[in-house]
Figure 1 (cartoon, rainbow, N blue to C red):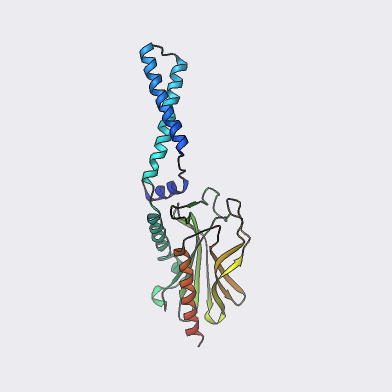
Figure 2: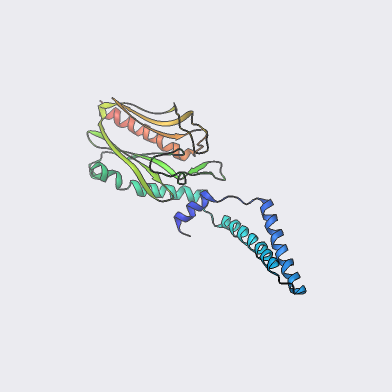
Length: 252
């Protein structure tokens, strides 16, 4: 199965309950007994054949769906794929859009990512998915990707919304500003008013915030309802520390 198909299967797979499996087994048993009865009695009426077909198909469909469980990628594999795919997106695209050459940068570029689980322009509701892994953390199909690149005189930013299942990105935007215009950079708890796809509301969210003179960049990275892993949140902490260090150097 192709990588994108495996990712979609992980998000859309529904665990088959024991009750459903028992029912499937009962249907299979009835089908076998029915076939045996028809062979011994010679009664091959239309109604009996239809019933036999139904009792035969139901368990096949259920057990086929259950067998997909063994082919689903692990949470570790998913996390590895997500990191790999995000790195592929930001390898060249941000710099092409910004018109910046990598050799002109004076420090390593920084990445901040955050999940999206609310209505977002350019995505259908079928695209916006989440699922809890066995480790208790949620994974998401749509992400905000924010990249910061440092030049000698100014800080550049690139942002897009990434559809992981389809491996596409939309809603791209870029910006650049002088270091002196940066007022503050931090991770903080902010008030938010997003309504999630499951009807819950984000009230107090963890977010990366870079405040400028007359502007602001915010990426929501986590929330009790979002429940993302600390690995994703740590990227924003690292970005804050690095940007602060650069600002101290440039504002001397």
